[in-house]
Structure formats: structure tokens, C-alpha cells
Length: 120
Image (cartoon, rainbow, N blue to C red):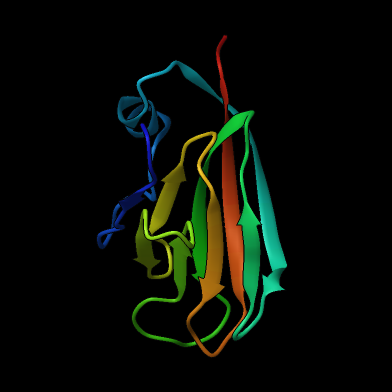
């Protein structure tokens, strides 16, 4: 996997499962942990451009208020990709890929981050 991919959540569906994520990545991965970031993505806020060399992460944004449409935009700030997500959609970000997140809505957004380790 050379760039991020979105998983759109349909009505009455699971967010995603580990087998679905493993099928997207060409390297072997294993579930590592889950984290929640709910302090940074305030209205108009962003997570600065970063990169992880040790993990694949699946980020699921959840609006902490009533809103419609896209709530977060993920990008590499270089034109390589630009993905907008609604609440409960997810983005799969492989290791080594630059990513920044921008809040597009009028409420705070919590980011549920599921991490997968690469098996070496």
C-alpha cells in the first residue's frame, strides 16, 4: 500500500475489521492497540503533518456534536492525496506516508486510532 485509502461506513455496518485492513496492505500486519485523540481537532484545528515509520494506522473520526457531511480532511499537503471523511468513515494510513488532518466542521472531532504493527 503506497498511499492512504478511505473506508466508507454504510448504515448498520461495522466500522472495519482486521481482515479487511490486512487485505489492503501487501505486508503482514497484526493488531497493536487503540488510542483516542479528542483534544486537538477543535473547530478549525489541525494535526500537523507527520509520518509513522513503525505502524499502519486506521483513523476513524467522530464528530462530538451535530453536523452533516465531511468532518475531517486528510492530506499529505503535497497533492499526493486529499481524502474527506464523514463521522465513522475511516482512513488507512500505511507506514512511511505523510499525513495531516484538518477539521472541516463546527464541532470538536475525536479521532479513534487503531494501530497495527508490521511483522518483520
